[in-house]
Length: 229
Ligand code: ADP
Ligand code: ADP
Figure (cartoon, protein in one colour):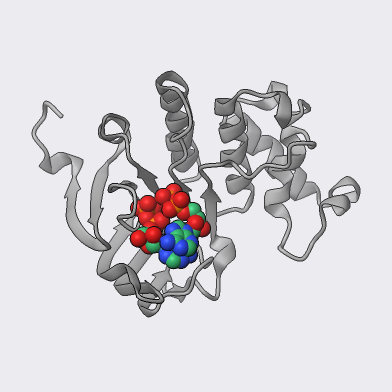
């Protein structure tokens, strides 16, 4: 369980204000971030992941600035960013590398805990039997599940996903979302997932945060919505 606290977050790129004065807190929830293209979803996730520095405001995870502890979040990308020439297992294992380590060193990797974590993560996303397949031979949905496994190997206290199912057909999208939800449940962590498909969001979200033009448009829990949604 973990607490993400975003306070008065503003991010500008030169003259472009991508986020303005956004505040919210997440504790032990599966949260969907909604918004049209350009609303600021990627920027928000990148700030939370420590990939981008806020212009103003603060982001803390369990009281620590995310700029100091970027290893505590695990990120799943839209274009899965896997290494095509490596197996699912080795791709999952790259989650255990710090940023200065080379891919080559994976082949002499000795940390038994990391190896076990990679296998456990593949099991969580239903790909244990495919562990030694090259990701280049896998379907888009399977590749995205390897991306989830890699994020889990980082031992995150918060899972982040930026449009994880945007490039998948509706049925693969549902499957990937089911595994993402399972991953968050098994690891008992919160998730912040950006989506633009409202039907997918409605099916999986426990709380919905909407952005428009860099500002918070709505923030509602599933329990506050009418039952027919
Ligand atoms: P979304 O993920 O909701 O599509 P983004 O966070 O990608 O939104 O973008 C929010 C706004 O910030 C857009 O106007 C976009 O063009 C702008 N933006 C995003 N990244 C950059 C960047 N690196 N440099 C300049 N402008 C950017
Ligand atoms: P998304 O809508 O999924 O966020 P984008 O196509 O907006 O994806 O952005 C992809 C990449 O380009 C990101 O790294 C983002 O920061 C950068 N980017 C987006 N808009 C701009 C922009 N106006 N100028 C420079 N970089 C941008």
